[in-house]
Length: 189
Ligand SMILES: Nc1nc2c(ncn2[C@@H]2O[C@H](COP(=O)(O)OP(=O)(O)O)[C@@H](O)[C@H]2O)c(=O)[nH]1
Ligand SMILES: [Mg+2]
Image (cartoon, rainbow, N blue to C red; front, side, top):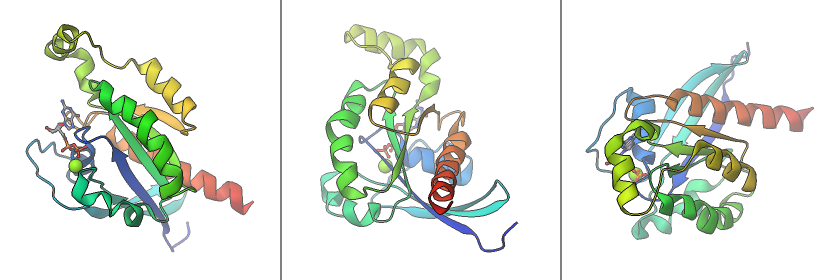
């Protein structure tokens, strides 16, 4: 195992309210903090061991609110991977992937790989959510639609997670990190 850690930069992006900050808090603390209020672009480091390599991953939160938009180019610079999120109960957040992020990401950081993530996955079995959407003539985004969207936008994979239950959160982190390692390995050899 090499002693020098491999450094990875991951940026979490997506529509406002999809759960980016909550996802990162769950990853960092193991807890679901419902009423956390953010007002900055938070960053923190997380270590992992993957394929006999020590990884030091810096994870960057983003905030699509207007005041912070001008900071986005700085946040994305040299990102290895973007964890691009939509919420499975929010069709606007799905549309935002196609209409905004597919256009903006290549300009923000053309070399970043993408992992597409459907957040709030525990809502699949939440009758109140299903009913709320039904009354508006809407429905949850099916898993298959997420996979298809990942292919459409050339993301490396589609994952679902719930910061509320913790399900899939670690897997998203590992998938994003592994993707960077594989990509670097391909370019080195
Ligand atoms: N049901 C559910 N709600 C979540 C989940 N993750 C975040 N939320 C809620 O979604 C709202 C927006 O979360 P936040 O992390 O601030 O979204 P951001 O704008 O993308 O950073 C908050 O009320 C969170 O409590 C989840 O996994 N399940
Ligand atoms: Mg946030």
